Amino acid sequence: MSEKIGISRDGINAALVIKESYRTGNPICVPGEPARILLPEHLINTDLDLVHFEDPLPLAMMATRDPESPMALAAVTRLSPKACHKDLITGVYQLVGEKTRHPLVKRCIDVVRENDFNPKAIAFVRTRTSLFIVETRKQYANALKALLRALLDGEMPSSEFVSQFIQLTEAGNLRSDVRQKLVTSLLLSETVRPGIKFLMLEHFNSFPLPTRQGIIQAVAKAPESRHIDVLQEELRWIVSHERQKKQADKKLKGKSAIVSKHGVH
Image 1 (cartoon, rainbow, N blue to C red):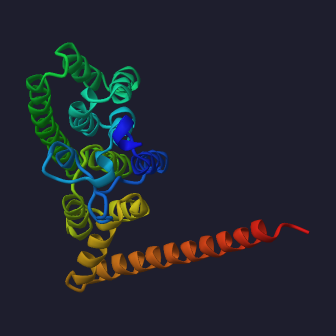
Image 2 (image 1 turned 45 degrees about the horizontal axis):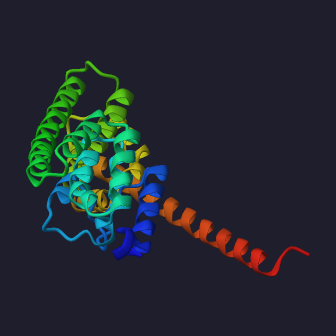
């Protein structure tokens, strides 16, 4: 099926996985590397094999549904060369331009189609997308600095700071290690109020798994103090509670499967 129409069954399954990630709010990871969040730079890098994410449908899903412009642009950039070989993919490409939530994605598709998929036009779009990704990262980094400054100067309520901090780190498509260092530095800082730290921990499960693991390890290795002891105890409670919840969900699914198999009498 893939050779004839350009779409494989594995590609369809990958698109469904991405769709579910958007529905649940979970990060999309590099195929085969669950601890590595997929970034716009990965999509721009044509030397990186993204396995089933290389198929047109997963790329079309990201270009259409991703909430952030850099990721959607990177996806359509990777999709562009594939859209000129098969009529079905050309149609999917056009549909992405009509359905995407990002005007810049639509503009890129228009440029490529108006130039009849000329390789120079595709290369131009890739270059502009790379520059856009770099510039967007700078803007988010500056916004995070301004946010922290407002907090330390007492110009922002704690709850608002935590909410905006999480939104900015998610929207900025930060690498897991960068996000982990930012959160850890706040938790271990002597100048940040304890109330802010506990508000941050209330949102702990909203962070990607690699970020959570890095935070736990960093806090566990921090020099002993009453302040650190309280953070460690809170993290232990969060991890224990999450483990119990997963075990309960697993048992419930097991019971549901038995009932479905044997029927209710």
